[in-house]
Length: 424
Image 1 (spheres, helix red, strand yellow):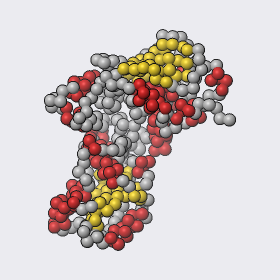
Image 2 (spheres, one colour):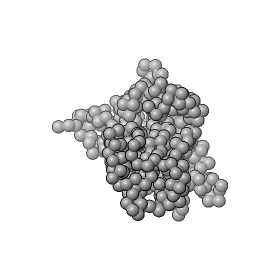
Image 3 (spheres, one colour):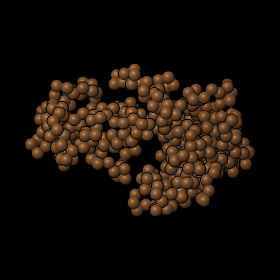
Image 4 (spheres, rainbow, N blue to C red):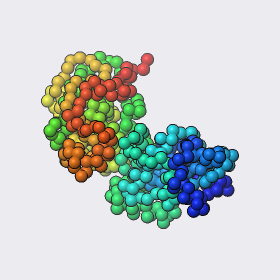
């Protein structure tokens, strides 16, 4: 996004010294961001500060939240207010900008920076100075949950900013740092539209495909209620489990959403149901998952959004294995405790025990180690881990924490709980 021809692009050492020492003492004049940043994963950001004489110094940032972090950083030093307005108008020719909460844009920049560094990508060279126009980052005071990557993996899509040589370098870097097959790029992503559809379906809380969950009134009247106990395997002291009651006509896709809600999972990772876990069939999952990420024979997989619980559960004591996050492999045993001959129209959490492990912490064995670290404030890794899971200084990780009222409140936010009746 060029801004040449207007303003005074930083050149003088005196200006650089002023920015390093004084920029943060200038009041914020305003912040802007591209309006489609959440959809595209790319954010054009402007952070401006006002000098006592009314002039403006601003930082212009191009942030790739999918993989590369701070791709561009530029400083516009000591422009007049009119010059700065002209710059904003010129930028609007390339991308639609809108006024934004300055805390939000700061957190987007720092989140993109941190994510990129996981994979060995350093920020644009001018960012070292341009960051002086930002507030200092304090992870403990962040207010926004900024999503980076796609479904927990980095994604690289070449743009006009990358030459063929640079694109090749990036892919080599991802092979080393993310690992083969652990990132998205044009060769293994069929298209952004399809990928976004897959991620939206996994999240479910935004609505998903409502037609997948339609059920007629006759089926409801002839249904029962299934009481399940869902317990995380390989977790103890304390064990982690939830007891839920759901309509028998719910799909496995809906059961996935309910389990995520009552445990506290985000729902952003892949999942599957199967009789005995990996390698057993049929595997019940999203059709997009086995289209994109597996090579399964016909008949081995069923679509979770079209397969109802009543098609598999018909006897008390039956169980299935639910695996969430094909990496951390959180394995849940889903046991049908009771078949209640009553009609129900929504899911209910009846009881539970134990806190949900922090997502992306590495799986059950890594969580057991993490609990030991968080139980000892003198442990050399305590501060790093406490900050990573978002603990404040006066907080302590409580592995026993479970609040039935809070969990039920989360369930009430799932859209389908109040929309299970057929259309008139």
